[in-house]
Amino acid sequence: MSSHKSQRRRGAAQISGNPKFWGRHAVTAALENPERRIIKVWGTREALAHVDLPQGVPFQFCEGSDLARFVPRDTPHQGIVAEVAPLEDVWLSDILGAHEDDDRPILILDQVTDPHNVGAIFRSAAAFDAIAVVTQDRHAPPESGVLAKSASGALEFVPWVRVVNLARALEEIAEHNYWRIGLSGHADTTLNKALAPRRNALVLGAEGEGMRANIEDHCDQLAKLPISEQMESLNVSNAAAIALYADAALRQSKAD
Image (cartoon, rainbow, N blue to C red; front, side, top):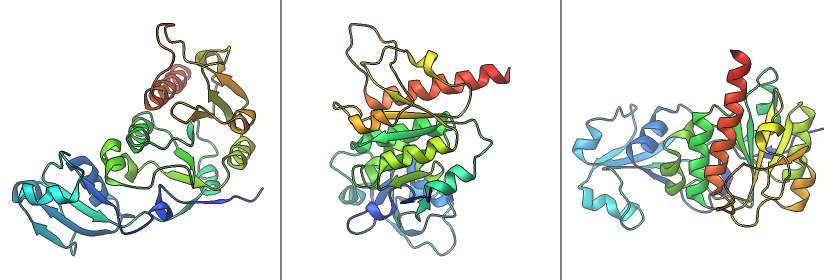
C-alpha cells in the first residue's frame, strides 16, 4: 500500500503566520533542534543569559511586561519567546520503515483537538519512548505556543504524523505488524490483557465523544482502563499516559 503524506507535527496545519513558543523548556528544545528554523527570539537579559542562541539567530532584549503581548493573557512566559517556522513534513511510511525491529508503541489520536491535551500527550509520549504520535490532518490542533508549552519540549523529538485518512493509516500500521488497541470505556477487556507482547498501536478518541465507529472498526481489539466505578472516564491525556506506561512496563518485564 502506498503511504499517504502527513505533516510532521503540525507543519502545514498552521493557518497564518508562524507560531510563537514561550517558556524555557519549549524554547530551549526548539533552539537545540537542528530541524527547527528559528526566526527570532525575544527575552529578558536574565533569561537569555541562560540560553545558548545559535549563531545568526536574531534576538531582542525585552522587559518581561513587553513579552506579555506575545502570549495569552496571564500566561507565564518565563522571560523568553521565540518565533519559529513549522517543522517539515514527514511520511507515515518513513516512520514505520525506520522502526521495523522496534517494539516501542505508536500513539494514534482520533480527533483530539484540545492543544493542552495534545501537548500533554506528546510529553507522555516522550517520557515513555513512543515512536510517534499520529493524528488526522484536519481534526487536530495546529502547532502553537499553547501546545508547545504543554509538551515541555517534546514536540522537537517525538514525530507528529498528520494523515488525511486515519482509517487508512491504521491499515498501513497493521501491515507493519502492530496490534491496534482502541481505548474505550465500553470495552469488556482491560488494557493489561489486551496488550500484545510486541508492537502495540494505542488508539484514543476525542474528548467526550471517544473514537468514531469507523476507527473502532479498524482496531484489532478494544480495551478499557480498570478505573473505579466512581469515575466514568479519565481525561484523554491522562488515559494516554497510563496506556503508554502499561506498554512500557510490559516491555520492561520482557527485558528482565
